[in-house]
Amino acid sequence: MKNRLNFVLMIVWIVLGAVVMTLLPGGCAAAAPAPTSTSTLLPVRVMQAAHDRVASGQYPMLVIGVVNGDKSRLYGFNAEGEPAPHADTVFEIGSVTKTFTGLALALAVESGEVALDESVAELLPNFEIPSRNGKAITLENLATQHSGLPRLPGNLQPWKNPANPYADYGVMKLEAFLSGYELKHDPGSHYKYSNLGFGLLGYALARREGVGYGELLQRAILNPLNMNSCAVRLNEAMRKHLAAGHDASENVVSNWDMAVLSGAGGLKCSAADMMGYLKANM
Image (cartoon, rainbow, N blue to C red; front, top):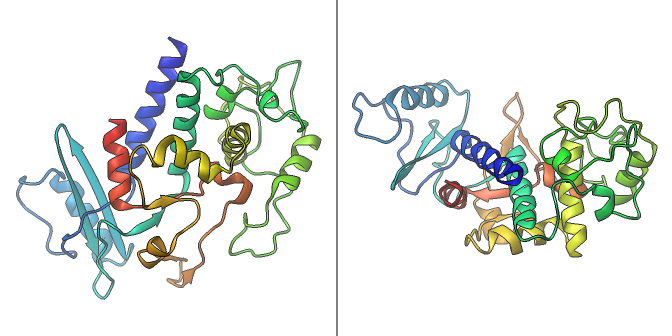
């Protein structure tokens, strides 16, 4: 029951995260006047809000995916002068990556390969994983943000490239930080959002299989769901359709490479693939 409850909670998280994620179909119109009818799956108030944000320049493009029973549709909006997004448009999905890491854990639990109460130290025997008052950090602690680990590792800085801060954060740095960190709370006792924790979870699950995080997801999730435009590393086809990120001054910025912490936010996915992911989980 406990395993099933965690699985259900994870799916709810995926659904909520993916619905507000930007997703979209080919053939979507630019930011035309907001609709006044209810003929679409997307509520008029949401359509209006999306239209307003794009028309004001707050977002250069916006994609919204809706699934309602056996009906689904993707809607896209683009500001004047901006290229129209389409089904193959690839986005850096950021922390929605965490839902893939959680799903990889859930699948491993269901297959009996790991247990939620298993300590992460059992998957990484060569690491010194911090514990407190005799309580080890479990896989469930990592997945539910109750590990006691900080949001980010203290040795993330200095970075070689501030525009891509995680790129040079490798296994040796991760191991060095964990070996010297003292938990402020017992694992399982306090909620604390941690990119470090989810990055560690993704790395540990992949290390157990003897592969990288990207390969772990390919085997467990992406290939079974035919998500061919979703990966940690961009292929040539994905790069051609990549939506560039911008800073507050509207300058194009580089993509982030999450390295050993990819399980926290390293995926890039097309709109069509993310809609397929949403449908599969629903």
